[in-house]
Length: 314
Image (cartoon, rainbow, N blue to C red; front, top):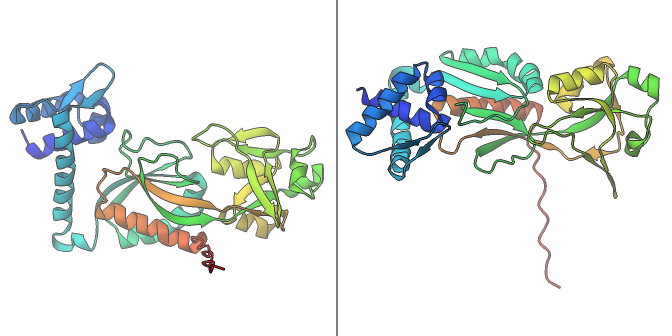
């Protein structure tokens, strides 16, 4: 038995929640993974996992051992990385998941420069707005917009998206230009609905103009769960859009989109890079997160809101 392979197989089974998923991510047979874990248990003379037909759970001894194994594997990874030129050039495979507009408009154009800087990092990039099981799917990190609802994840805030309301000229020619956000709630106008992954529903948008504030949900004939499809529907005249500036900028400049309600403001949307709390922040993951933060600083920098001055007594 190779102890390193056995520990790696054990850790992956814990993270994936099953021997089958662990085998897939390790590119091994389920039988091989099972044998490695059984051999590890025999060597340690303890039961590490409780197995049922549906799931795998850690025993008390297994939980203690898992925490040590994760640290040991991370230390081994760092030890290898620190040798020769690898300290300056991190290497290895990264599995990430990002929203489709962010991937196509910001990350992809910048990836050649990233590859030139880190030629030995291999990126497997999922492009979606779906909910990703970071541990179960063995994903190193995800980039997501909006406040994170999964408090079990670690996250780094890398940007803030400024939002605006837009419509295609074809839509405005057909249905007229709304003069107030509340007009989007009437029987004439339509929005393009966006189905958020964490709720599966279209959520209202809060807008403010001085002391006046409204929450607009609108009516739609089309709702989608992908940012690229959402933009395409708006460009086709299917309804009014709420868009981050980076998605709207080029289309506005070409006249493909018209900004509405210039005097109204929407709350900015934070952008996070999230990862599992027990997932070691390897050098390759660290430089990827730093790179995403550099890009967002150019396209959607974090907004630093002024703190309220302290009130003096009396």
